[in-house]
Each structure stands twice: as C-alpha cells, then as structure tokens.
Image (cartoon, rainbow, N blue to C red; front, side, top):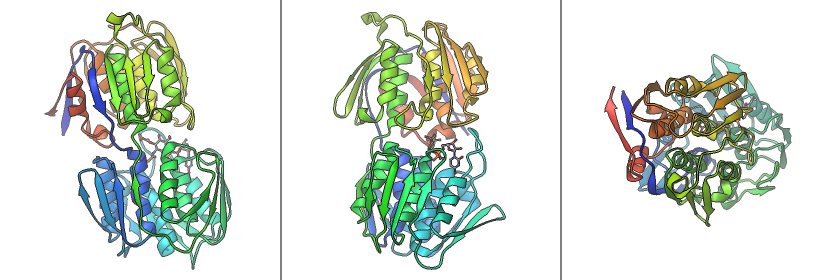
Amino acid sequence: MEKLVIQGGKPLVGEVRISGAKNAALPLIAATLLAPGTHILHNVPDLRDTRTILKLLESLGITWRRQDTTLMIDSTHLTFSEASYDLVKTMRASVLVLGPLLARLGRAKVSLPGGCAIGARPINFHITGFEKLGVTCRLENGYVDAEIEGRMQGSTIYFDIPSVTGTENLLMAAVLAKGTTVIKNAAREPEIGNLIDMLTGMGAEIQGRETDRLEICGVERLSPADCTIIPDRIEAGTYLIAVGATGGEATIKGCNPAHLPSLLEKLRATGMEIKENADTIFVSADRRKGNGKLRSVDIKTMPYPGYPTDLQAQFMALMTLSSGVCVINETIFENRFMHVGELQRMGADIRTNGHTAVINGKGADGLCGAPVMATDLRASSSLVIAGLAASGRTEISRIYHLERGYEQMVDKLTRLGAEVWKEQE
Ligand code: EPU
C-alpha cells in the first residue's frame, strides 16, 4: 500500500486545471446502458471509481475504449443484468446501473451496498421509486432483485430528502417508462443537470432541469449519446481551500464557478480574494499582500445549492488555521467527522457533539505535521490540505481513498509548488 508524504509550509502558487467530475461521470457512464450503440463521453476523469464502473459495465457484456479523456462505450451487447457484491462493495455508486438495467432489460440484480465510513446510506428511496413505476423488488441474500414484465409505468415519486443518486436512478428508469413520471423534491446538483442534458440528447423528454420537480415523458427508445462531463466542482473547491490554507495565490482553470455558489461566498467571508470568470477562478490568500488573518466562518451542509457535504472536511481543515471560533453543522451524513481525530493529531482544536463541530482556530501556524490515516475520500483531502499548511512532515496512509476521486493530485500539487510524493508503506 502507498502513503502520501507532505513536507508542509509552502504556499501553493500558480495554476491548476480541473478534471471532469467523478460524480457526473459515474451516472453518465451508467446511462450508456439505456441505448444500444456506441456512446461518446468527453472529459472523463481517469479515477479508481470510473475504472470500477467500467469494470462493472464489462461484467454486463459492454465493451469500451479510452482515448485521452474521451470514452467510447459500445453498449450493444448488454447480456447480463447482475452487479456482484465484489464490485458494489468497492463503490456504492454501482447501484446506478439499477435504473438503466430495468429500463432496457426489465431485470436487475444488484448487491446492496451496505453502510460506509460516512454513514448508513440506505437506498430505500431508489427502491420505493422503482416500485412506484411497477417494478417488483425483492431483497434477498444481500441483493436487490428487481423485475418488471414489459415497460415501467410512469408515476409520481416523492423523496423525503433530495437524493442525488436516487434522482439519477429514477430519471434513467423513467425516460423509457410508459407515460409521465414526476419526481418531487428531486436533488438539483449540477451533476443531475449534466445527466439530464445527456438523456435529452439521446431523445428523452425531461422538463424542470435545475428545479426540484422533474417531469419525464417516457419515450420508446433512445439513441447513443455524445456528451461532455462537467468540471469537478468538488475538486475545484478542494484546490481553492488548499490555496487558502497555505496562504497562496492561484488560478483554478477549466472549472465552472457557477457550480460553487456557497463555497465562493464562504471563502470571501474568510477574507480571501476570489475573482470569477467564465471558466476560471482566481484565488488569493497571500498574507504578504495584506489579506491579513483568515476569519472564522460557520458552515452548514445542505443539498445543492447549499454548502456541499463533499467540501465540509476540507473547510474544517481551513478553519483550524483561522483566527476565531467556527461552527460546522453536517446535516447530510450522520458520521462525516472521521477526519476530526486525525486533524486533532496535527494540533487542531476541535470539539464535536453529534452533527456539530466547533473549531477553535489557532492561526496560520496552528498545525504541525504528523502520521495520519485517511478514512474516506473527502476526509483524505482535508488531511492533504492540513498537511500542506502544517509545519514539518505529514504522512497520510490509505491514500487509495484519494485515488477514487482526485485525478493526478500529486502532479497537480507539485506544479503548484507543494513538496509532496508517494512512498510505499
Ligand atoms: N438517503 C436515504 N435513502 C436513500 C437515499 C439517500 O435515506 O435511498 C439519505 C442519505 O443517507 C443521506 C441523504 O439521503 O443522508 C442524501 O444522500 P444522497 O442519496 O444524496 O447521496 P448519494 O447519492 O449516495 C451522492 C454523492 C456523494 C455525496 C452525496 C451528497 C455520487 C456518486 N455520490 O451520494 O459523493 O456526498 O451525493 O451530496 O454522486 C463523494 O464524492 O465523496 C461522495 C460521497
């Protein structure tokens, strides 16, 4: 196993280019199952998670090839309908094949993903939604075995909480159902907009993009897609925060600032300078330029366009370096403070009570390097940020978590002037 070593204390300076979004690539790759033929997806990041979903597609009979960032997926020979525990346990988003398999084959047997490091994460909304569309779902031996005779039947589906992959799964099922489906309290994340654009390009009829009420008028068949994955807003946000934590100055290129409304306002409130253009964000936290101390700012994670849970851990790392007290409220997942214990080992002053963390910022020199352990993807990136800002050497073990969602992170950070490398554990 590899670990990441960081010799901290250097401001990040320069330019970094953002990759395609992991959480858009996964549903878009799954959506290629909906129509036979060759689909073309551009700007696809090469990550552990995108490789996992492609391996899953292969296990269903699909072939694909990659040329740089473009994927060509031939889904003509969709011959199997089962996603095994071995694949699903390594990536929960594998459940995204349920909707397309049901729409195309009328059958899907997919392992239940089980809990994960950040919470229980059930898929009951997905299953109830499929049942509303006429599907019979049996839960047996750790699998969802779902079946329908003929086409699904449009219906009205209401989510108690807006679920991102739930909305995506039901969208992919409803586009080929008979009649009209309405999804109420749908999630509005930009990745869902990307999926809607792909499905519309394939011939689907969907109203309500960017709203919490989606109306889908089912069609009989779809044609192959040619679609571009949106930039990864969580990767962009992670680099913005890292530049802030190290007192650096950088241009984040190839991103979409409009997808980061809450983060950009929060960063401005800390005193960082942020300038947005169509597809770049300039960020400066250069203390020599009089940007002064980092102010404490509270955050509460919410469904989009609220503050994203996927940037909570990184913001906490930033706040350990602030000049006051801040409160972070995590409302999406029940166990997403796994990074707290590791940040404390680096000298952070944090107390938690249930879904709330109180961070007593210790100023720009508040962290020192330490050996720490990554527990999940975003917790790992918060430790990278802490390590970059800390004095001395930080060693982060279990970095396979990072490789699930950050493309070429070591190269990108090195180009920004960080001293960071991988070593065998
Ligand atoms: N929920 C249920 N039942 C369901 C579905 C969701 O109770 O059937 C609850 C969840 O437990 C959670 C809330 O609803 O409390 C929202 O969960 P959601 O379904 O939106 O999460 P997800 O679709 O499983 C996606 C991202 C996550 C991101 C969340 C929230 C993908 C592949 N994953 O997960 O990304 O944290 O939305 O924005 O899109 C990551 O990239 O690190 C990551 C974890």
